Each structure stands twice: as structure tokens, then as C-alpha cells.
Length: 152
Image (cartoon, rainbow, N blue to C red; front, side, top):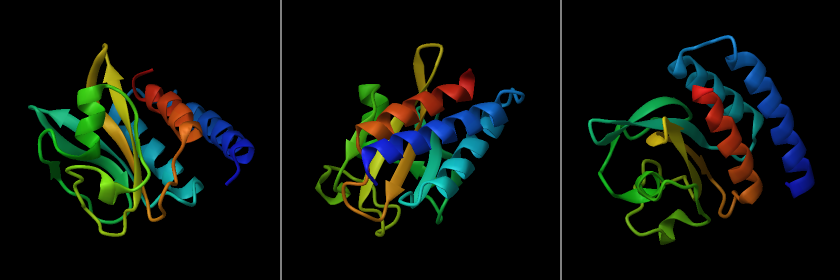
């Protein structure tokens, strides 16, 4: 999808998510709504969900898509890179990412956006695609804004 169209689509999705989650105070309900809406509105999303940092482990939270890994090995893979680096990570080809955790062999590219509360990373939004190089800075920009709605 060309970046102008992608940007406009994300803008519409952001507005819809903001309207839906604002009346609800539960972070889990907000995460569930965010994952469902993103997963069904963006056609190149294959797996969309949150991993939450609990007792120094990343454990699966609300998600859409095929069965997920329940826990992710500490300091391994793209999700932990997002946690440890405290920044968004875009991987064009997951097979080339050192320590990639393959919850599904169908995943080819990935973006991970840290979920921050009180200036601490408490989890990540993880999105996988079946196509190589699906994600770019437009995805990063909008997903970072969307993730901020969890604790807004």
C-alpha cells in the first residue's frame, strides 16, 4: 500500500479506536479492542497482539490471529528487543533476526512497539505479516500513537 493511503487509513483507524476506548478505563479491554480493530482493518496483518511484562516474563495478552506463544524466552527475539531497547523495532525478514522466536512459520516480517506506563515498559504490541518487509515508518508512527491510548 502506498504511504499516502496507508497514512490516511491509519488516521481513520486511530480516530475510531480513540472513540471506542476513551469511555473504558480497563487497559485489557482497550488492548482487546485495539488488537481486534487493527487486525481486521489492515489486510497485511497476520498476527496482532500484546505481550505483557509480568514478573520479568513476557506473557501473551489480548490478541487476534492463530495460536500464540504463551511466554517468550527472556532477552530473545523481536519483542524482547523492543522491551530492552525501549523503542519500536521493525524487522523486514524475521529469518534474519538473531534469536527470532517463531511462534508461526507463516510470519515473515514483524513490528514491535513498546507499551509504556509511568515511563516504564510494561509490554509490547507485536504485529506479524505473512509478507516480507510489510512494515515501515508509517506503521511505526501510527502504532506508537495507538499504543499510547491503552493508558491515556
